[in-house]
Image (cartoon, rainbow, N blue to C red; front, side):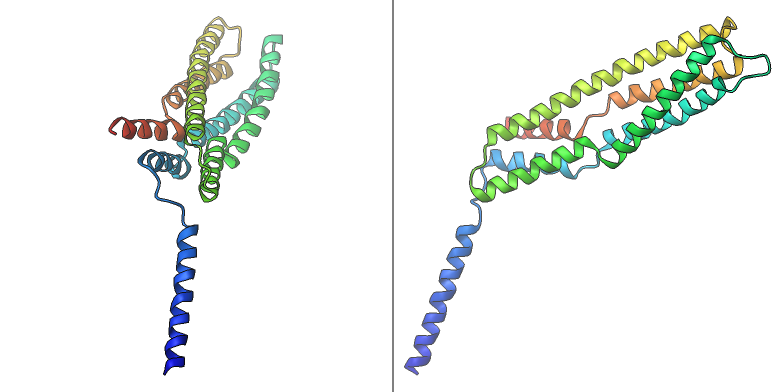
Length: 221
C-alpha cells in the first residue's frame, strides 16, 4: 500500500509540474489596450476586403472597356480613320493591357489583406516571445490607415479626371472629330467608370475601420 501511495504521490507531483510548465508557456492576460489592439488587428485581417475586391473588379471592367475602345478605333472604317482616332486606339490598347494585368494581380494578391495578416502573425509571434511593442503596432496600424486614406484621395482625383475626360470625348464627338458611334461609347463608358471610381473612393479600408474601432474603445478608458 505504501508503494502504491508513493507512486500516486509521485504521479501527482509530475502532473503538477507539467501543469505549471504549461501555465508558464501561456502568455499573460493582455491589458485592455493590448486586447483592443489585438481585436482591431484581427478585424483588419478577417474582414472582407471590399476595397481591394472592388478595385480589382473595376480594373477588369476598365480593361474590358478599353479593349472594346481599342478595337473600335483601330479597326479601319469604310471611310478610313484619322490620326487622332489611331492615337486614341493605341492608347486604349496600352491601357487595356495594363488594366488587365493590374486587375488580375490585385484580385489574386490583395495588398491590404496580406499586410494585415502579416501584422497579426507578427503580433502573435512577439506575444509568445513576450516582447510585444504596442506603440510600434499602433504606429503600423495608423500608417496603414493613413496610406489607405491617401489612396482614396487618389481614386477620388482620378474619378474627377475621368469625368473631365468623358466630357472632353463627348465634345470631340459632337464636333465630329471622332466617329460618333465609337466616340459616344467611349464617352459613356468613361463616365460610368468615373462614377464607379468615385464610389470606390468613399469605401474605408479594413485598416481604417479597425483603427477607428480601436480609438473609439481607447477613448472610453
